[in-house]
Length: 345
Image (cartoon, rainbow, N blue to C red; front, side, top):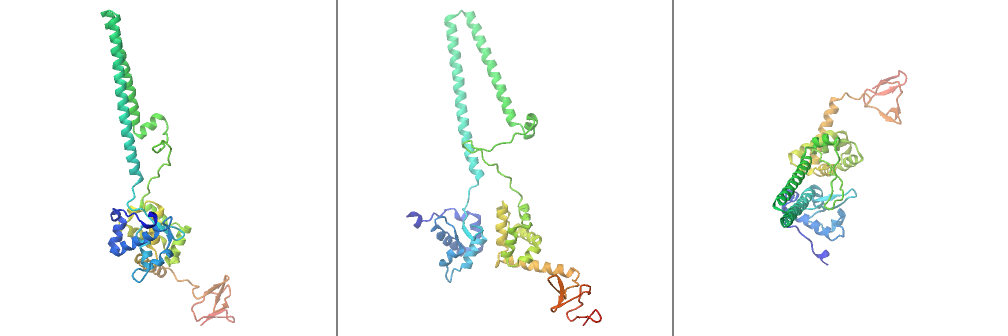
């Protein structure tokens, strides 16, 4: 019953940078639309749907186009390849912070237990030493008592000194820099990352610079072809993809969006929104690429065969075949004179 009629609303929702960005650009209307979408998704078992599911929520004041804008442009929803979307977590905790907190607690408990064990060991040694001294006083002369006590003290001092040296040596080995450990052992032993229960985990990969991740978008892949088609000017975008990626990088720097690009998937989603039809960024990019294309065409030498057509590999004009050894057609009004084997206008 509660699952169908109640929705958990985070008190710190507006402290998420994406929600603040939504409020700055769209105001209360954008915030209200976001929570309308969340309410509709909460009615579903897995909180995941396609855009057509929200058409029943549209009216004159809230269009499906504006709903789609809120879903796509502010990184508040995870977009799937099949066109479905689901809400992203607000103010997510980083895994590293969680593991660090658990590790600190475990280390504190371990240190406490070690202190207790050391204290118990010291007390037991003192009791044993006192018992031996008492027995020696009862069963030996003063000379023998002195000799036994002296031997025990020497033995305790020697044992304590040996243990201290071993402990100090172990601590020094543990605190050695990575290179010294490698030199002393001959070869570096790979470290295994374990969870709180001692089970090995998959090692974390270092985060690549965001410029390197964005540069990877220019590599021709099936995803890039689909993204270009989605933009509405796919052939132009594919032809000048490196220039488009350079404009995309400038946009990221100007709007300070690079902190959210931690993986190639993040960069791809942002680029699709950047080139999404109807967006101002996409329209500006289209105008830039058109100007670049015109500049390159004006600088390139004209094609001598521009007044001809190729049909099945044969040269033609106005449906007529052109001999293979004929020079290029000079203009749109020229026709081939078979008698003189030349072009005439």
